[in-house]
Image 1: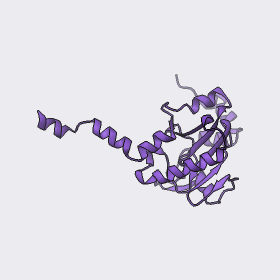
Image 2 (image 1 turned 120 degrees about the vertical axis):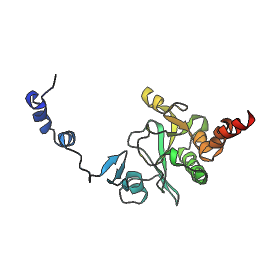
Image 3 (image 1 turned 90 degrees about the horizontal axis):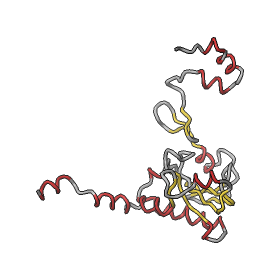
Image 4 (image 1 turned 135 degrees about the vertical axis):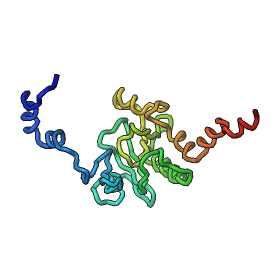
Length: 197
């Protein structure tokens, strides 16, 4: 059965809802920019702007808790714990999946800043990254948290070891190349296996 949206009055109702109705009823033009997770991309897949880059470059106003040549730090709009700080590299790195071995000094600096800003007992802290596609902004950011979490939902969102959240140590280990090397060594190459037979 085909549902006629015009007949049901849904389109008329949406028309009165402003921007939402525009978004729901418009057709995507090939030259439209695409906004995804705080980043604007053009039709050619080139980054046009990034929310966190704008904060780092001071093109958008954001109260910063810390800034140096490599990183900035600020409080998120919706804190998940007693203390919640985001430490962000100034250089655009989309996600943890884009980290390479040469980024380990940057990761170390991010951790150093996070620990300095938290100013609390280390047993009550957590440093973690969300793993794509569960990251909220496509610009790498370290969540520095002092527990307790403000809700059970936040506790779940930031549960390390789940597919959506990794510890700082785990991400640094993989970025350093050690994790990738370990995985490579555990899988025998086909050519070597054939020679042994």
